Image 1 (tube, rainbow over the protein chains, first blue to last red):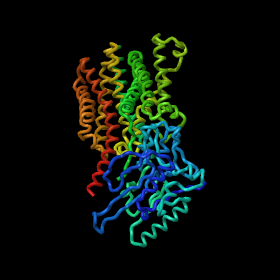
Image 2 (tube, chains in turn red, cyan):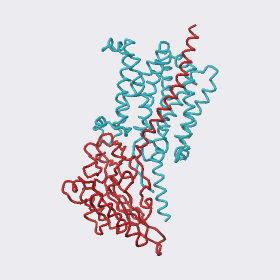
Image 3 (cartoon, rainbow over the protein chains, first blue to last red):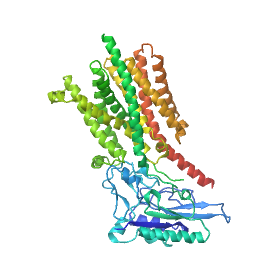
Image 4 (spheres, rainbow over the protein chains, first blue to last red):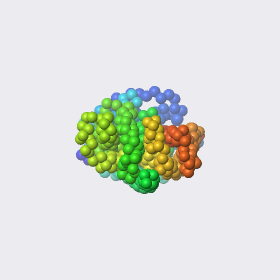
Length: 258
Length: 303
């Protein structure tokens, strides 16, 4: 199967949160009582084990002036090619599907939470009630089993979310970026090269950090070898130190015996 | 600002596991070092009691790790995979293998003492020196991998310090020496426990720890350890009581006999410092994410 990718065009998102609702409905995720956030018109605020899709509201400029603008981004798991959560999962519960999505088998997950601290996007979340982690599955049950698009894409009224094979989505992203730039606005594609390529790609109208995305996300496991090397080198030093101290003891004992 | 999430590992399982696992691995290393480089005949009690301590503590560790899981009954799933890039995966295997060697060594020593009868003759014929060398290798891994585990996450305070593995390893040896000293004193082997060469080793380890703790504080985000939140657990318990005080006491008694009470105090302080080092590192990682979130909210509200 070809690698499938979702393209999120932030320039035409109207912040209706239809994708959030569709995600909850299709995946039978419970509503979360979070109280009043006080942040813009967004009470969802963040992704969680029960909220796999979240439209972030970003307000820029001073209220009631020409400078003010809204930015919206429909956010979810990025299904990275180099996925920290997948690399670190010690049970094999996190796996890659045929279309490139990174999914969690909650019947295998034992809730060790290592994936939570390994996601550079802060997506993977621990469900304290179920004792397992949860995140967006890219609706693999729809896309791979039924041949349909993800629920959020189907619900999007402005086609801000588009679904297709990776090459087509890359080409579409280039066209969208060119169109925005032709109008004089800044635009960039996020997810083409980051972490080997994200299967949820974005056309952004500002810097990634403005949308809560790291400009240069890292696969933390790339530093595992470094950590082991320092530990091994240090253990050699410690060995020498112990050798000196204990040899001294042996000499001391021999002196005593003499 | 990226809304990172951090694992909600409770300190009473994870920090305690780091502490016990470190002492177990360190105690076994101490026994192996004594067997290979030291005076095994004279220090028989040290080797035996270090190994017994290692065996008991390493059996508690899997229980703590299992209790920490969201789905405790699926703990065995850890042993269905072998992933080189996953410190948890390698650590699970290392814990299993090290546990085997620690328990086996303890049984061999018990058989030698005539306190273990089942298969005693077979146990006594095993090449214990070779077994301890192999076990010690896995012991080093068990003592250090927990630090590597933390530093290979995206949590800034952990990720920025690539010496966490080494820090935990040094602390493991240091706390193990302290724990074994106390154990030997309790069993009445004062002379074995109170030898200036062990004090030399402890001094070297504490010297390493000073450097590593200073390094930790000066890493990006390390200043969180100097905030009021960690005043008691890090500044007082780790830096002052756990490292500096025993270091100064050991230096003070370097050329003179150390009274047993002082030796016991030094050992207790080192153990306190070793536990709170792990506690502080674990909680500072979590707090660093909370701090970032608070800053983000502040930015949002200030426009």
